[in-house]
Length: 268
Image (tube, rainbow, N blue to C red; front, top):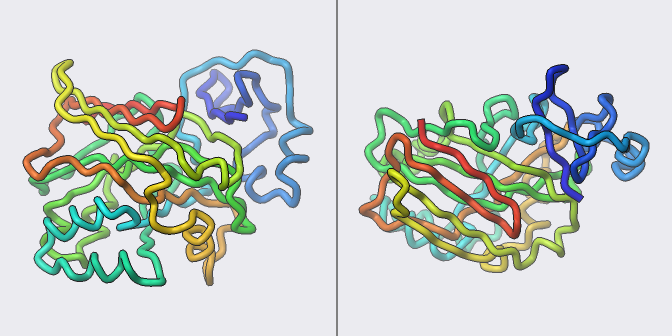
């Protein structure tokens, strides 16, 4: 089942597989309910849904991210950094790298503009499987995440990670939340296409099976000693890294696909 959040004349409203849910349905309610299935089931309607897609994150949710979970990501971080050994250490360590990315209200939905920092010279999109997690820590589904990042700022010093990762327009999510088990996410195809003036300038692909750590392990570490009473989103790292001579430019179109879901955003 796919949950979508739509912009309507009466405000944001949720739908399930193309049919509106009751206006009382919220993602916060779903991710905090004792029984999410029961909460969803009592709010089904037969009303056909319509409206522009919004980010699936509500204001109450936080969006976090995992770093260096793919070998390709580790190698790329080592290449950009003046202290490359920290990335090798975290890739092989028991504890994963986790960092805060955005609040729900800061996230961009499908068709909304993403941004690159004006004080950065090397910027990339990072296509990621984003977990949707219940307040209990259980993974309930996934969406697509774009962790737009400054490689030049992070490369100067890993302590600059928050500035490289967290800024206006650096996080996009959507187009839907696909409800499924963590096992169903074990080997999903992930692709990215970047177009400039209608010409493809970069394309890449990977699979979620290339993530080094189990998805449940990433979620468990995030919820260890930290409460998310309204649920949370967790991006699981990128396995697609453009070559070192590539940087995003204004008006580039970034199209990310996971299975048959597509998230598309243009650089403002």
